[in-house]
Length: 111
Image: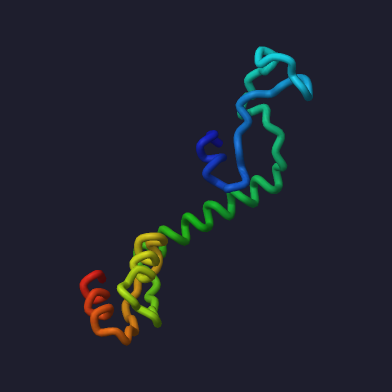
């Protein structure tokens, strides 16, 4: 697995670039570079996280082909509906309710 993929899989993953051999180093020269392959990780947790990442990616890809239709009960000017559509790519507001005529007109133009 590449370092970029490792970091993308979970928000809890991070990468340590340097390792100090003492708890309180006296100079910055005491550091050594850490290789990605040298990191100790829980194999079981990593496999579960990677599986979850691929499952979510697969779900999102399928849902982008045919987005789930959503009813926006408080349409406003359409910001929430637009956020659903643009943010996830899996949801599309097909119907909305709005009491204000000017907001409803704006909503109609936005979507």
